[in-house]
Image (cartoon, rainbow, N blue to C red; front, side):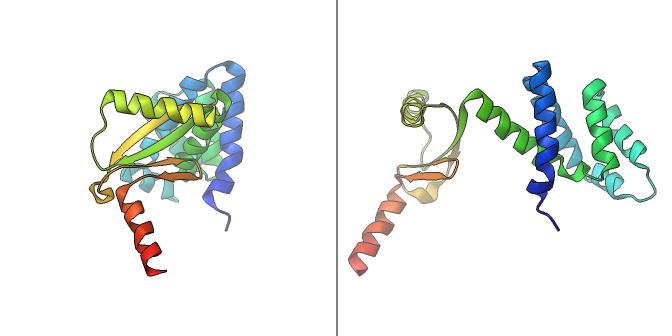
Length: 176
């Protein structure tokens, strides 16, 4: 069986092309986020998996909950007809990645042992933007196990300046 990301990709790309063509990337982002949230509700998941409900009825459920019309309604109907409603969270993720790429944005996951002040975060974002040449959107998480310092994840790159990582490197050096 194919990976969900592989199956979701053509749907995300099609939605992105529609949104980009109509100049409504923000609207589609919001709609896909809402659809992904609704699709995770246990009652909706049960309805999607119910063999007694037709594709049209299941699509109608999404359409009525979110008051969809036009392209959004058509998109949900296509997903329902192809049995792909369970892929909505992955479609949303891939759409979001395409939008970020189009807008020159990279998301940074900043993990820190202590709360960062607004000035510290702004300085970090500025440095990351200078390093990457792209606009950086930072999501900050607290992790007391880092002891001190920060760890930054930019796509597939990891910059680990945490005390925990430095202590681990010191341990390895001492054992060698």
